Image (cartoon, rainbow, N blue to C red):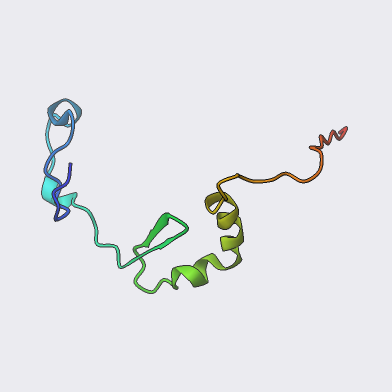
Length: 88
């Protein structure tokens, strides 16, 4: 459990899982220098030199759009489904 400032304040079953305990001040949340979103997905990078999300995703956005930006009617499959069987 973390505070709203990112400090670790509790761990479920702390005494059972860590009988000797540990220093909770060493396990707080890290600052994420780059946080961005695309199509409802949230991306974060701890690399301060990371490229922008748009540059990083590049043409992959096409596939994310297929998954995340469906219309209310859903996806339309054109043509019959096919089954391919190849003998080894």
